[in-house]
Length: 138
Image (cartoon, rainbow, N blue to C red; front, side, top):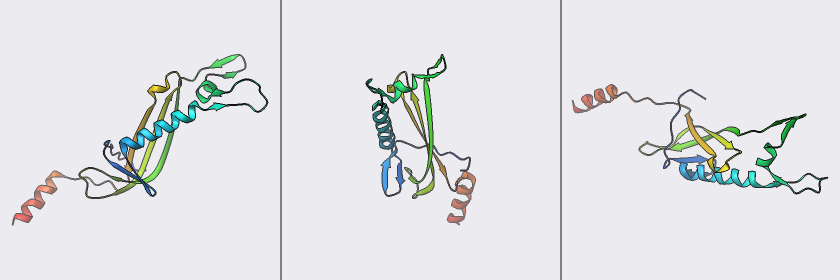
């Protein structure tokens, strides 16, 4: 990925394979699916105890007698995509970076960050635009 990052507006559109999503809807779906998966119960095959959720499992980590409570878990994922931005001239190829921050103490405050890294970053120079206007007028 190059080091140019394009911030995404909630109304921008992301094309992932054959599926398209508004950025706002994509964030909503990722959040919903993660929350659903983390609240599922996990059962040990040889235990008669009731299952615990994935978030509860993170609070049960221990090394010997030392207990570790993870208050934050982060996941990062990058995927090829195309972006259609408001006011743009068409689809732009690149990578969508999805970062998920899960707060085990308060899952209602989970964060989803989306960043777009274009294959080619096009920088517009206002001076160049002015020159083009002058040439077009003459």
